[in-house]
Image 1 (cartoon, rainbow, N blue to C red):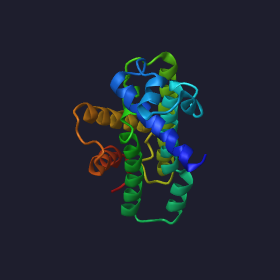
Image 2: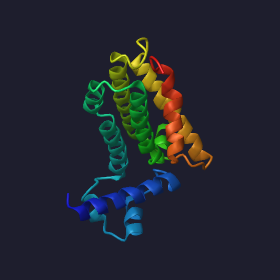
Image 3: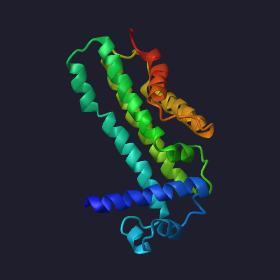
Length: 204
């Protein structure tokens, strides 16, 4: 897609996203997005068939970004160099903190998970469940590689550890958002990663 098309597509996503949060999903219509951006309906339909597709695009982008950050080949290549434990801890912390930053930058995702967007139907809920399972699967894979390389404790169960990490982090981000605190601060996401992961390291 040409850069101009990508820019317009992102404008549509950003506008719709704000409306979903402020007006509710059911009360947001494509016509309102068009009016806000001063564009024709046909422009929106070049990219999305309906408003659900806009919502799904947000979830897909977040999942893709997290999968890129937690690329298993990057992790395996890094571990093959036999770095010191201190270097490994920083590398892993930075990867998880980057994932948290991706989630923090899309508060609508957290609100969808907690069904805190008015007008969400079962189709959207099902899509959110698939998204959540994908995120847990990606993080579980990361934990499994670290466990199998004797970085994390042998008795760590990757799916459970990943579910606990994702659940706890999303709750924190959700609460920060509700309390209007700065959950985008890098020190916050870094602290989350350290707090929830350091208990599973084999030695520190």
